[in-house]
Length: 245
Image (cartoon, rainbow, N blue to C red):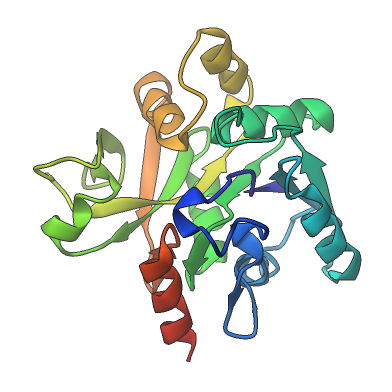
């Protein structure tokens, strides 16, 4: 299994904090957001390598960090060579870019957005993914409030967890299950990524690809317990630090 951490955004909503500092390296408590994520990844058996995809603006920041990082597997920084928010490849574009640039052979992939702050058990998540293969799985979090749910991409599922509908920041939510930016994509659906991109679909937000996967090959959701924040603005960043304190 390989892990890919998506860190190629420009985090303009967090300016001035992120004008010269990538969001995943912002400190929460005593360590960067990225290290909170990798601490969870570290508990998963079978991870062979971690790829961290970023951009031209912030690649040197991550390379400096990686030189000091100590994990059971290599953390390789991949520069997608974009230079602005307007020219970014998008999450799915970056996912495909890493696979191509590093010639990664078909394998199970754990994909995580680099601005996630959570205390989920990723071992249980990947174990659930193995049970549901050849289908992919996304981690979801019940925000338990329909007003709050309007801010997120939501999923409605069958009793056994199969995704039946996606809603992107809906004005009238049918569910409070929010996609948390954590995905398990088994090697059996490896070729579908190229099919999706070559067909001209949206490569920016991962939710578009997940919706397509749900319709094309079937996709499951696993609600995870604990704390979760999508660190997208100053309020959520401050809340993450409050939680740690």
